[in-house]
Length: 194
Image (cartoon, rainbow, N blue to C red; front, side):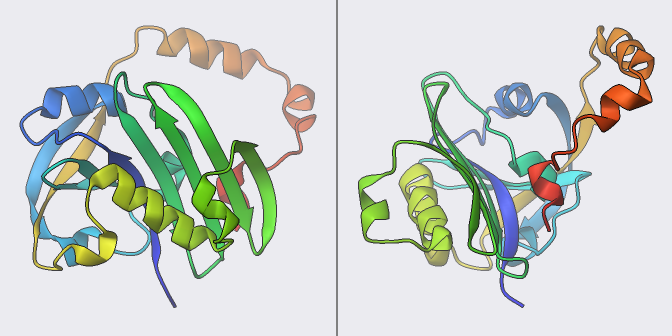
């Protein structure tokens, strides 16, 4: 079946800075329990919670596919959001440095839907997008995915949306949009490609 994982990697350890992580993720995090890395890297992560691993130099947040499809630009940090689905052969990356999006790729079953930004030098020798994800993962986290012991500690947090005072206005505007206007955009969002 293969791996079906997704998440956000940041080149800074936020273990003692959960409030800053909440700002990055734009939601409150409620601690649930400690889990090991094997459980944290489970296939098909729920969108109700995340599992967080802290390396010496970075932070890995396992998120749902939907949340991992967007970049999380952070001031003075490097971030990688990734989707790696070997089952559906879908691969996605968003790579940022200091809030600037440098590279975006979305590929499904060998068809590239999005390929923006300058290719990294190592892409010349490697066309396999899963290997690109693992390479950027290690570069950002400071540790290879394969070097993380399955028994290492991770922390499960449930999401609680931060109240947005403009949300009611946004919802009202969306409901006023006509059905025909909604139907004019036939393009599928990337996570519905599989």
